[in-house]
Image (tube, rainbow, N blue to C red; front, side):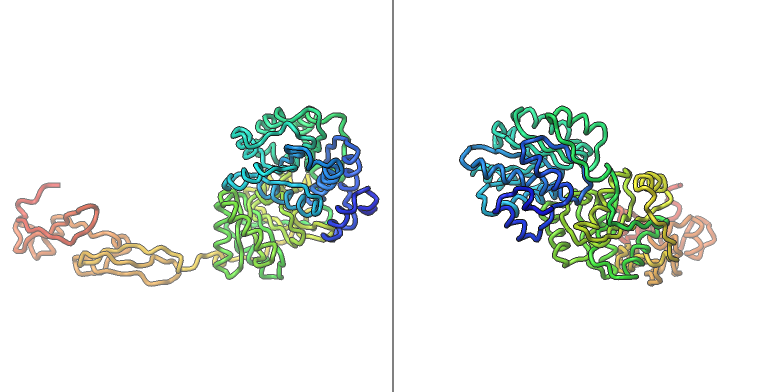
Length: 478
């Protein structure tokens, strides 16, 4: 089957040819005709199967043929869970709708709302949005949804996981009941089926792959490795053979930044993306990865969905996800558009319970690989990264040195008694007892000294090297 057999108009067919798309994917083949007939759709397909085009193409055609530009207001609303996915959907509407004179806008949080509100005020036919920012602009009066004809919820399971269910319910109360609804989700748990029953009217069920099944074109491998040796294993794998386009997943934002810092120290070009980074920084990192300026992208699960990068060759799970279904979305970033991909996972001792769920969900398709011999020295930080410590010399001045475990020399300052300080005394002046003072002054402890006593007087927790002479008989008792 080709796109011509799906009754698409010449303008859209021309745009598809310009993108190099000639044959529809199974989800597109099963959805487009039903949407063109005005039916509600509930679709289940794993990530990377072309769901965006499955609803974007028929909606663009129906808006164009019904002369939507002559009617005021927003006619189509598409909700997406993440900024990256919303931007990807916006790009798809732009590419597929060239020459149709339909206006669209995308709104999401994390950036200034001014450009978004300016676009809304100039008139929009298609609005792509994340639930939080949309509800905010609705409350400010910038968005009105009473003219909605097409309502699309994409990656519904992800939106529920992120806690958007209440926002979605509030948005639904503002749109007309008479509408056409398209509902797509990679997985179909009971909660999502319950939500779909309240939104759709006599829907057509479209299912390409079994829910939560792993990608067919992806070879899956697993290493059992100690947590403190994961960096060494990653370096070993990356150096063994060239990885043209590798996406590495970590569980935490801090872990992503630390891993990138380690990769950069080893001379590898890498960037990270996660929720704490600004939208501009995330887009720049993605742009560098897409244009191959960097071959390594380290990300949290913010990138497990919504990344339209078709040539990712390897996905590496540096940390296993806590939910097995997230594993499906992660490895779905590779093996797209008919290409073969490789997914490699590191499993620490504390992650074995996660591995059992993942292996069960994948149908025991994960191949266990023997872990190579690794050394802790491979993950050791460079001495130049050590922070300087402050030492106190006999003249009372601060001096800097390095307490490196890599064999670098330390500053060894002389103590007040004339000898070298021990390791425990190196950072602080020595404390002397009365007998020690007497002995150091050549006395036998008779209560009087021939030399004035030198006493340490702390001021603002700093050593000023000041000494005050007092007779030993007036020394305060301890």
